[in-house]
Image 1: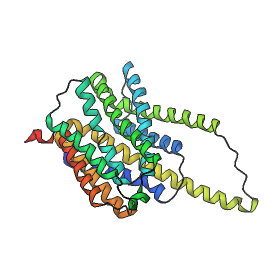
Image 2: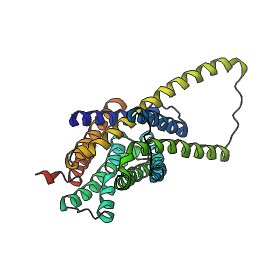
Image 3: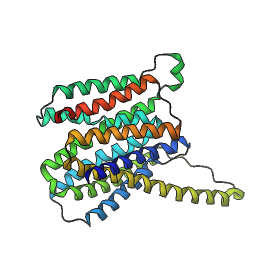
Image 4: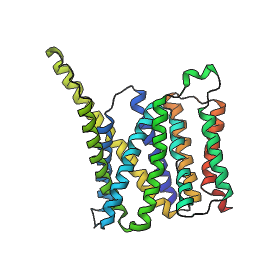
Length: 309
């Protein structure tokens, strides 16, 4: 059963990655604040349904929920922007490699032992990212990664690692209220992003010219269609993201990490890359293919996959 859940988790993660890249490919504009507020709302509803309501919270549950909510807001925001401004294959690798930072933190703070294989995996991951991002010739200048993507990818990497770190603290001190913490944190995401959106609107408020009377009805019909499509898009992204995150929480405790992390992260990278090439015409050079293979191998090493041998 665990492997069936793992397959569902990988599928949901890949669908989420593809959906997040779709607006940029179709050159559609999206309000990033409204989008992620909607995604957090979908998470809250699904988690409430999954948990059968809220069954009580300890005082520290709200503290962890507020902290996790801030980190989750950054994670959702940066992930959306990174997938929307850069290639799927590299963005998925960046997100999947973030547990390298979590591993280093756990070794320093929680005094977890780090094997030589894991150190080699961290070094290999750095080499893999270099192989994928390096542009040695003028011929590849048109494929230069934009600064916007680099900033959001760095944020995606950092916040992805922080979600694991904060969640580890919660499991150490308040594991009995995991579902409640996640429900409250989804509400915290909505509140935080709403405040940020309001602040941005006040600082950069611009009055758009009113549409001509002849175009008013056409504009209204178009706006209504966009609203419906947007609602469906938010629902799909929120459901896919919630499903794979919730399944991963269960699987990380039900399966050995040396099996779960390589299979989930490796599958996420592999299928996201394949579908990115198929649907969005992303092309990989031989050097980048070696980098992707090296990245998957690094995940196996850092997950201590050889500890099973």
